[in-house]
Image 1 (cartoon, rainbow, N blue to C red):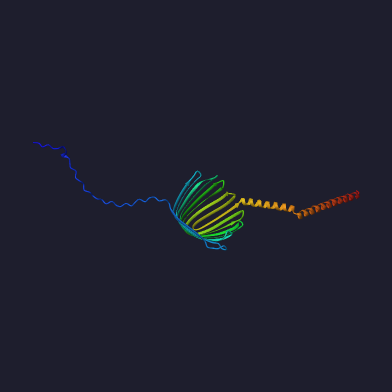
Image 2 (image 1 turned 60 degrees about the vertical axis):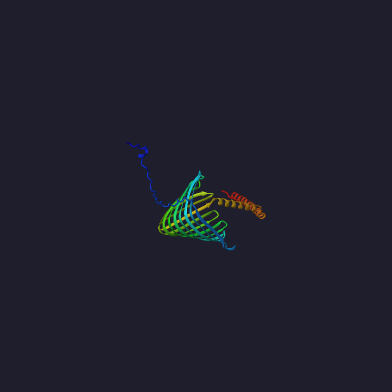
Length: 316
């Protein structure tokens, strides 16, 4: 006798699987990218009086900034991840002044730009990753467009710097570059003499330390009526020397001064011509000259007649 078997009885009955709790390590949230931010501040105060004006200012900046721009004629990029601080004090007025300052910087600063400026092409690039501190001083005096200034900069620096620039076209040419690396201390001194029609700037410096520095530049430009010719150079290997000379001639000021002199001469000439005393003197001179001319003429005629008479008396 056979027992009928249902069709689904041959299937395996699934057994429930045990639940296993596996600990999952805690994952910190992913940081979101932040926009470049900076912190900066500035304060200034006048502490002098009307007789001796004195002003003190201080400023600082820290953080990171980045920028880029581009148009049909130029493009530029800049990156600044540095901290800077400075304190400055100025004593004096527009005619005579003296300033002292201390400033420090650490971090990376880089920039590049290039393009067309009218009929001129230019390229500028700079990079610095330095820590440095400067103590500066300057004394200047000005009176009616004529003046001079003397400055000094004592510094300590470590890091690397590079710079290059080119300008060529209708404004002239200005090209140069420099590179320095290492740790060193130094001092630079400069003098600028401003005249109504020209200015001359000279500077020289010396540095000491385990560093290398080399650079040179030359300039011959004509911008807004001002012609500038200058050269600079520096070379350092443990002991470094640098020297710069620049001369600027303001052709517009020359034209103004020449026109002023011409107008002054014309006014004086008209004034003298209308002066009664001058007219009287002119009449006296004319009358005297006429009398002298008549006397000379009469004397010459008399001498000629005497010579003729003497010749007639001679018989050969």
